Length: 115
Image 1 (tube, one colour):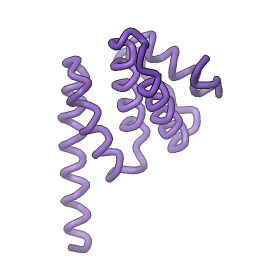
Image 2 (cartoon, rainbow, N blue to C red; image 1 turned 135 degrees about the horizontal axis):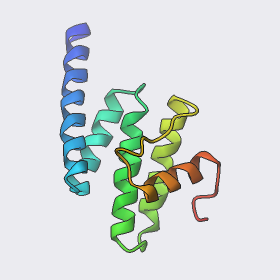
Image 3 (cartoon, rainbow, N blue to C red; image 1 turned 90 degrees about the horizontal axis):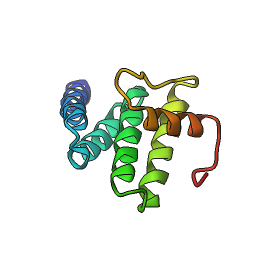
Image 4 (cartoon, rainbow, N blue to C red; image 1 turned 120 degrees about the vertical axis):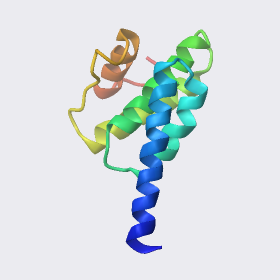
């Protein structure tokens, strides 16, 4: 495969990411999460991908009426991944709701996931 295969994998991941972003903004978090996970496995240096994954997972957590702590933990892990890629990374309030931004800031500040 070589370089052509790698380029094709990245192009496919970018398309997967675009579809996942669309699903996220349509409120279809079940469709968004796998696409974001897949894109994040291939495109490793873009903090937007794990940030969006964290947002989708946290929105799912909120929709479960905060009963599925695993979703909250996974969201925190995704946010930490975004921060590992780019320390100081922040979420744009034009694209993310206040509850998601508040949780992101809590994770960024190093707060324990359960707090």
